[in-house]
Structure formats: C-alpha cells, structure tokens
Image (tube, rainbow, N blue to C red; front, side, top):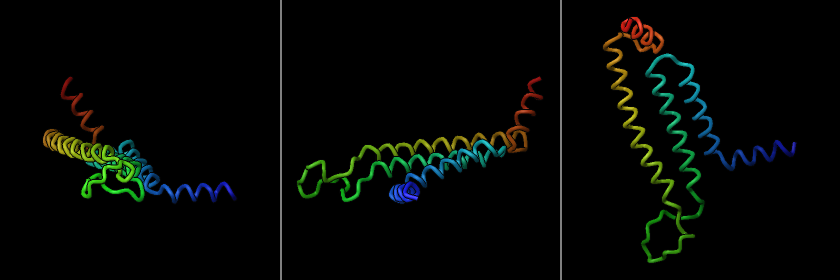
Length: 130
C-alpha cells in the first residue's frame, strides 16, 4: 500500500511527463499499427508533440521567471533555463516542415497509385518495376 501511495504521489507530481509518455505511446502505436499513410503521419505528429511536451516540462522550474531581464537583476537562479524552450521551438519548426513534406509526398503517391495503403503502394510499385 505504501508503494502504491508513493507511485501515485510521484505520478501526480510529474503528470506532464506521464502525459508525454502516454502521447508518445499513442503515436508510436499508430505509427506501427496503421497502414494508411495519413494516419502514420498523424501518429508521427503525436510523437513529436509528446517529445516537445516532455522537454518543456523538464525545462520549467516552479517559481522562476522567463529569462527576460527587466529590473537589472542578472542572478541566474531567478530565471528558467532558455535552452529547452529554444530546442522545442526549433523542433516545432522542423516538425512542421517534415509534416508538410510527408503530406506532399502522400498526395503524390495517391495521385499515382490511387490508394493510401502503404502495403498496396509497395505492391503496385514492385509490380510496376518488374
């Protein structure tokens, strides 16, 4: 009973990290289980969002301010580390670019093979090659 209480206390103290892991699991499962290319892209976006949530949760420290110096106080213990935020913003830009490219490629594949099923596209491409 004590171990369960400790587990629940840690879970509720780190609920952002738990939510990020659940989102990552949903995205990874979607990426593995679905044959539809659009559903795979959505699963990949779930995984991206989970990683960004995890990084943002790990970079935040309760009681600290954004690293914008307004009153002349430069004590680093008063501010949150800006590196995780910069990584998240950079990752979001890369993720949007990869998603746009993936959707454009999916549109091209649909125009050529008239399906979004990855197994059927592979079969038709091999048939076309031989």
